[in-house]
Every structure is written in C-alpha cells, then in structure tokens.
Length: 290
Image (cartoon, rainbow, N blue to C red):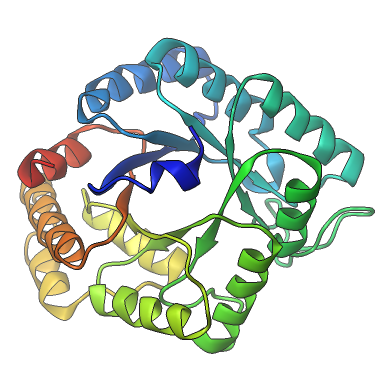
C-alpha cells in the first residue's frame, strides 16, 4: 500500500522504525529483532521503516530486512535511502531492486557523511541534496516518497525558515509524506505545522516519537540531534538517572502524554523510533489504546 493512501485513514496511523543490526552475529541479532517485531505486530502497524546506515554501510542488510518484513510479518516495509556514495546508475539499480520486491514506498534522505568524515561530499554523478534524490526517484520509478522534517531545525541550517524552504523543495520534487525527527516538546511540532502550512506545504506531516528508556540514551540524543527536553522532564530524569526502571517508567509516561496531545490535535499518525526493542513502544501504545 502506498503512503499517500495509508494516510487517508480516519484513525491515527501507527508505524515503526528499526535499524539493521551491525557487528558480529548479524543473523542472531536479526532473529532477536524479529521476535521484537512479532510482539509489536499486535499493534497493527501500517508500515515499518528500515534505516540505511551512514555512508550506505547497511545497504544490503536493509534490503534483507525489507524482504523479511514483507514475507514473514506481512507488514508493508519502507526502506530508507540516501544520496551517500552512489552515482546515478547505482542509485537506479538499487531502486529497481526495491520495486522488484513489490515495495511501494521509500524514505529519501540526503544522509550523513561516512564515518570519519565531517562534511557531506556530493558523489560524482550523484546528488548533494535530498530534493535532487526525490526528483530522480519520482522521475524514474513508481515509488511513493517520504522525506524527513525537522521541527527544531536541521543542524546544518541557519534557521527554521531556511529549513522549511528546503523542505518545500523536497515536496515540490515529489514527496508525498513528511516524517519528522524526534522531539520532546510538542510546541516545536505545532509551530512547525503552522510554518509549513504558511509556506504552502499541505502533505501529511507525521511526528517522530522516541520513548526515553535510559538516561545515557537521552544524553546521546541531545548530543546528536540537538533536540530540547522540557525542563520538568529533564529534572525527573536527572533525579532518577541511576534507576533504570524508574527512567523507563518516566519515559513511557511522558511519551503517552505527548502522544495524547498530538492525537487530540488530529495528527495523521505516530512514527515510533523503536531502537529495535518492543518494551517501551508497547508500553506507550497499550496506554493509548488506539
């Protein structure tokens, strides 16, 4: 099913993100991941997105997971795809392999620089921006295209207004859906909706949700994404940072309230970053009872 059709649903659409296991014992880790996904499948997700490692490092693993999600779970998979390290013929070959699997959707991203490199370098005969990749996918395939949005501004953008102009380029190039980076203060998301609407962007914008499950996790997230955590939540996390169970409970409770406010404001769906685990996501969705 195509994303543009999925988001015609009158109820909030539930979707998940996973990432390909890395390191040693890949097959064992993958089997464990699918046990987690079997648990999450009871929530009837409309699709599961599969990330694409920095520098394209998990390209084939991503494709393998996409195949297995479709075959073993009978859930619509949506692979991520980036501009990193590929020329146009290589990009087209990969896109054709996705379509041959009967996949209808893709999440198109510029991507992060390969490990050890600080700046993104446009590949020879490739693309330097996500809107260029979106346009190429739109012109050469029948894939339905999702793109990323940044309620708190992409770290390489000077301001949100500039970031939204970049977003509009992706939409004009052929994107059908926007999935946002995680955030913990809904005010940023609602302001983002207002600004995108004022700039003529009228496709579904789906909030990205990551339930907090450890103190180290939130420290790392703040470092990588620059997202802001409400002061009241941060104080609770700091108070109980040495108690894993309390942190998980606080994280789930906060995510539930965050999602309730979003649902009350008629968002089209929730895209939950699972970190390949089922417990926190299950805790949130069980409480929401969607």
